[in-house]
Image (cartoon, rainbow, N blue to C red; front, side):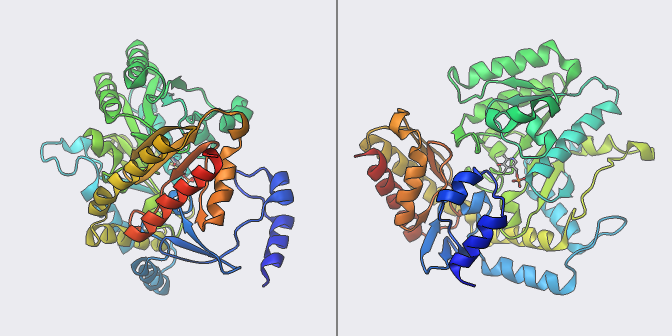
Length: 443
Ligand SMILES: *Cc1c(COP(=O)(O)O)cnc(C)c1O
């Protein structure tokens, strides 16, 4: 099919996510991707683009990793799907045990078994992984003696996904305002990255918990890195302090590691940077290998125990594709590739280059502010507003001419590439971002 015909059909029928469709149809010349490999996307017109965000943060091992493709093909030949209703299968069982074996706290012999993240509930994306955690927390309290515990504390700027529960605990005004009347009530506290720092944000969490422990079902947060807020970063000290405060009043800490999980921040899990074990931990993006939608919610043995007993105490929740064998087989192979290719060691080696590059850009290009980096995420903001209000999009265009696919968030320009990106491709990415920013902001 001709490239132009694909675009024609697309503009006639496809409603794109997070896209102002009128402007898109009138102005956008989309990439038409026919093939991907490693760090690159190949357009039907023959152009090769370096994927600066791992296709919305999912492909941490690069596109079409040969081992993941093999795991997919082998599993597809035997069992592409079966429900988990009175049925189990090797990929689901093994993956759950492997996740439990690497979960935060798994390396602490002294951790009580009730606090271990030894139970895995499968779903099919990040939003549902969060939705499950919300329902687990609410139902746990409802049937274990604290029925008034229905409210969640959440951070401003938080992003936890798209379903109504996940939107309710989200804190990006643009994404939630229109649904306001439909969302459940939460307690928003300032992001620890805002003015006053984490200590001020923590003070509000702690005072809310101490004042109303009987109504708080839990605190949910994206540890250390709020992705969709615009790559907002904060100290692991905040996560540690919140864990202590939730423990003090015996309520839950839910770690949404859909973005940060599996190495993005330089630790296997971002909560590991704080030495914290949450009560529930949500995973999706990296776990899916960038191949098929897949999600998992890890829960502590204590949370799990709260659903034992009479059948009306069960978690009546499930999706058609819970624990999908293809997704589970790929996720197992993802974990194996992390081990065999020393992905965490690779991140430790490459992360300082990302940080140094963004600091250098902010120092040398006028108008750039707030350079920041954690692990393999680097970001900088185009400050000043005014003619730069659409600066992010101008950087997108300048980068595209250089063979880079960037997707700025407003005026935040960031990279979140494959963790296994080669040194040469990383150099190409960083110098391309710098040249694009220079073109847009430096002139
Ligand atoms: C992307 C994201 C989600 C939602 O995941 P989907 O797979 O897009 O539903 C939830 N939480 C965080 C922190 C995310 O970055």
